[in-house]
Image (cartoon, rainbow, N blue to C red; front, side, top):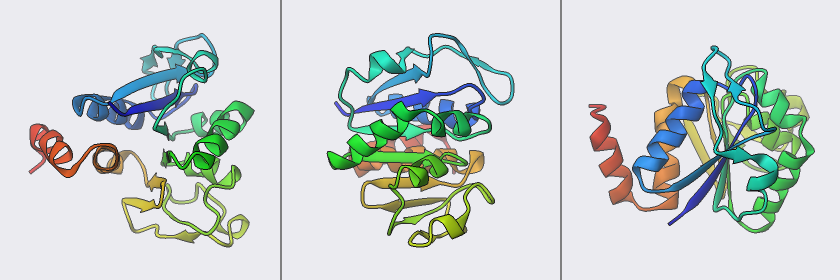
Length: 184
């Protein structure tokens, strides 16, 4: 069974976090949520999230993918945490997936994971002049370039989660989860 770590920072975008967690679990993917500390997480719209564990404890495990929810100031807290940057670099070094949505692709960028990649993000969240080798496809809801996956924001969270399911499992599982959502 694939395993995914979703770090939760104070001020994260709850719709993005919960959509990813929920849909991946519907696909029988082992999802571990980890707070940057041992406190409940108050998300950007005031919803309180209780992580499964702390980031320090989660870092003792191995994961197939790490997914960073966006939102502000959550993405800034992720970006300011050296453990997150080290985790992202370690994942990339092991040829494992890193994924980020909304404002969180800036964490991937600051960790050097968007160099020479295609990506998308929430409008205005990244400074393209600081990432000159990155090709931004801002009209795309989800962009997958190798083992790096980015998405635009809350409105693309389902597409993002379904893409992650397809990458970690197979098309049949992805389609089964989408069918259960009754999106069409």
